[in-house]
Amino acid sequence: MRSDLVLRGILIAFTAFAAYAISDACVKLIEGRVSPYESGFFGAVFGIAALPFLMKRGDRWQDMFATTNRPLWLLRFFSAGAGIIGSVTAFTHLSMAEAFCLIFLLPSFVTIMSVVFLEEQVGIRRWSAVIVGFLGVLVVLRPGFRELSIGHVGAIFAGVSGAVSIVIYRAIGPKEKNISLYGAGLLGGLVICGLFMLGDFRLPSGEEWLLLAGYGLLGALGNVLLMYAAFYAPAAVVGPIQYSQMLWGILFGYLIFGDRVDLPMVAGIVLIIGSGLLTIARERTKGVPLPPPVAGKDEAALAIKPEDD
Figure 1 (tube, rainbow, N blue to C red):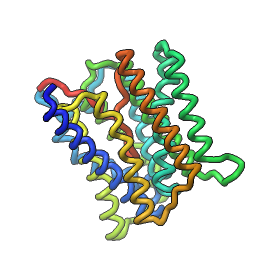
Figure 2 (cartoon, helix red, strand yellow):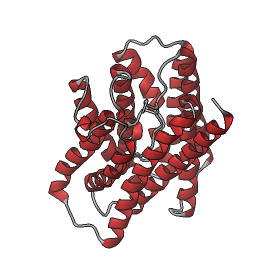
Figure 3 (cartoon, one colour):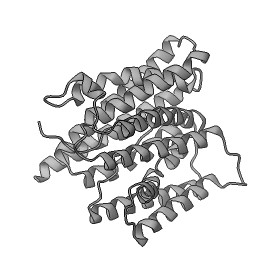
Figure 4 (cartoon, one colour):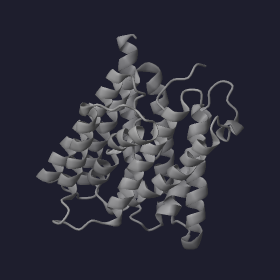
C-alpha cells in the first residue's frame, strides 16, 4: 500500500476521533439538563445524516433491517441502545478522561467474550493485557478511597456494549453488510432511547438543541471519516489511533470543564492504553479481526473494513 495513501488514512482517522471527542464534549455540556435517554434519542436522530455516506453501491435503505443472522442483529439492536445510554451517562457524571478510561476497557471485554462465546484460543500475552487493563481501572477508580457514581456504571455499560458489537461482527463475519450492522445500532438507539425518554421528556432549549445537534452530527461525521480512513490505511494502523481521544478528553476537560488529571489517573491511563495496544498487536499477529475503534457513541457498528464498490 502506498505510503502517501496510508498517511492520508492516518490523518483522516485522527480527524474522525477528534470529531468523536468534540461530540462527547457536546453531550457533556448539556450537564444532564435533558435525560440520557433523550440525549441518546436525538443523537441517533441526527446520526441518520451519516447513512447516505455509509451506503455502498447496491445498498438499499431496507438493508438496515436485512441480516444473515436475526438473533445477533437483535442483540446488536438492544446492546447498542444500552451502550448509548451508558456513554451519555458516563460523560454527564465523569470527567472526559475518566469516562474514556473505562470505555477503553473494550478490548479486554472483547478478549473475554471471544473466549466464552466464540471459543477463541487466547494465549498468555492477551490474558496479561486483560489483567493489565483491569489493574489500570483499579488505579483510576481507587475503590474504597473515593466515591463511585452512576457515571462509572454507565461507562462500563458503554464498553461492554461496544465489545458485544465486535463479537457479533466476528460471529457474523464479512458477509454481513456494514449498513446492516450500523442500522441495527442506529435503530436500537432510536427505539430504546425513544421509549425510555417518554416518561421524562422535556423540550430542549435553543442552546440544548445546538449541543444535541453537535453530539449527533459530529458523531455521524466521525463514522463517515472513519470509513474513508479504512479505505486508505489498514485496520492495524487505524485502530490504535482511537486512543488519541484520550488526549482530546484531557485537553477539553482542562480547558472547558476545569478537570484535573492526578498522578494515579495518569498511571491508570497508561496501563489501560498499554493493555489495549498490546491486545491489538497480538490480535494482528494471530490474524484475529481487529476491534473497531470506540468512542462515546456506538461507532463500533461500523467495522473498519472497506467493502468493494
